[in-house]
Every structure is written in C-alpha cells, then in structure tokens.
Image (cartoon, rainbow, N blue to C red; front, top):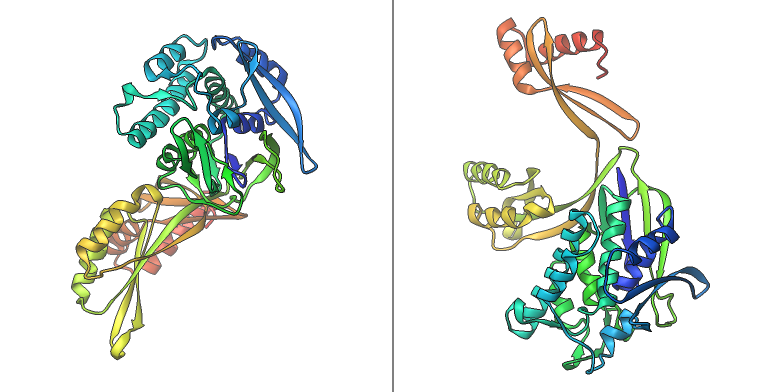
Length: 403
C-alpha cells in the first residue's frame, strides 16, 4: 500500500503543498512545463529552491500577467483593486484545462469546498460568492498543480497530521478577522486543529480545502517505510522552519488504521437489555462491541460497555449507543489499529464446503475455519466443535494451508 503522509506542523497553503509534492515527483522540471501548458490564463509557474532554518526545499512562484502574487500575501493582505472572480468563471476556466476528466473534477470539487465555506461565512448563495483570496489565477495554478500531482503520485491512502492554524488575527478584504478566518474554520470542521503560539494565519482556505478533500484520515504518522520526502516552503520567515513536509512510503502489505473506542459505564440495565443493545450497536456499524464487569459508585456492580468503530461509522454508532442504552455520556479514545490482511474463501473438503479466513502480515500467517462450518460438521459427525476443527485443520494442512 502506497501511503502519503502530510505533516502540517506549520499549517498549509496551496503553494506549499504543491511545492512539497513536487519534490516527490520523478521529473519536477517536466511537470512544471506541463502545468504551464494546461491552459491557465496569463499564468506562469516557476520552481525555486528555498532555505528555511537550514532546511532546503522548494518554493513555487506563480506570476500572473508577469507579476508575482504569492498566495500568502494574496490571502493575508488583499489589494482592493484586485479582480474578483466568481464560481461560474472558475468552473468555465476549469472546463477548458487540458487535463484528464478526473483531475478537472478534483479541481472543481476543491473550489466547491471553498465556495461553500465562503457562502456560509458571508451568508449568501454560492453563485454570488466572489473569491477575494482564492479566486485569482495564482490560486487556480496552486489547486491545479496539487490535483495533478496527487493524480500522478497516486497514493492509496493519504494521512494528514493535526493542522497548525496559527493564532491572533488576519487582515483581509472584509477587515481584520480572527485566525483561523471564518471560511477556513468552516472548511476545517471535524478536522483536528490547534492554534499554537505563532501569530498569524498559517492555514489558508486553499490549503484547508486541499487537505480536507484529499485526506483519507487525520492523525499521527502511520507505520510506513519512507521512500520519498518533500519540503514545500512558505514565503514568510519564523523562528520555526516555515515548511510543509510530505512523506511517501509503503506498508509492505501490513495495514494500520485509525479506529475509535467509545465507552460508557452502565449500572441500571439487565443482561438481556445489554445483549440487545450490543446487537443493535453492531448493526449500526461498530467493528466490535464488548463488556467488562466494573464496580461503580455506591458499591454497585455494573458493566463497562465498549465498542470499536471507524470514523465513517462513528456518528451512527454514537446514536445507537444513546438510543439502546441508558447511558447519558460517552468517552472517546482514538487508537492506531494494526491489522493483518484478511481474505475469505470457500474450500471443498471431504466434509463439504468450508469457509475459511486467511490472515497474513507482520510476519504472521494463519487460517481459521468459520464457526458455522465447524458447527455443521460437528453436528453431522456427532463430535465436538474442537474435534471438528481438528479434522478440518488437518485436511487444510494436507492441502497446503498453514494454520
């Protein structure tokens, strides 16, 4: 599995992300030539070397009509004479780009995230939004470049660190606003972010939308064998290196994933009620539900109800816990889960068709017979489950399956 990890210790902007990803590309100069030829009006993209706090990386400069307009300055200190571009104009430009349909669709989807956030921040319809900070051609180039690079690097999974957004205030077309700016804050809903001590806007709307769109999950760096590292440099200088780092690597088939553990203490439900609730929570999308006996206040015996679920199922699982149990509160833990690669197959044996699960990874390999198959054979042969599994395991072993 090819994994891309994006380290946002100093936030994210479109030019920084493009610059970092460009360092992972096998032919950066040729990529810049192609980006300049896709048809973004009046734009020229230049790759430069930049050094921040002794770290060497890449900084992308975009010239529009011959003038340079860095995205940070563009988003932080708006020139009121600047041309404002609407969503309709942006989509017209995107449709004319000489790119695969998938890439054009990605670019449009990123802009839709920004437009939706701007419309919510300003209280108007998307079609009436004018992009003060992100609608000009330099931002079109940044978003197009990132979407092209993501298409060509083709990671199987994208993991993004918690995003450093900065703190304080930022000056924009509408006046002085808190950091993160309203549109950026909306885009980053449900994303782990933190303010830190650095004054200023570290994460721009463009950077936030690109992260939100491409991230499969947010969290710590997964276990991976790193094959490439890229540094995308920002324009400003801070005591901390102003860069965005990306790492590309593989997991050699070993899988890690982020999973949530939800738990609550219960002392006023019967065993039958808890059993029924557990079944309903599993149906809601939990990966596992289990109980542990605990001692509670006033010396009451109770149970600790715990369930594991993935991020995409968390809301439904939480709703089910509150619906089918008597708890009035939940605790959440974020866990890194290491899992083996798993496959299922039907194996023909002298006892009939048997479904087996094969698991491998982290130096381990095992085969396990499904309970239903073992129970059927035990019933047919008048033997115990243990004896039935032993018979099946022997036949599987004779046919080359390792337990």
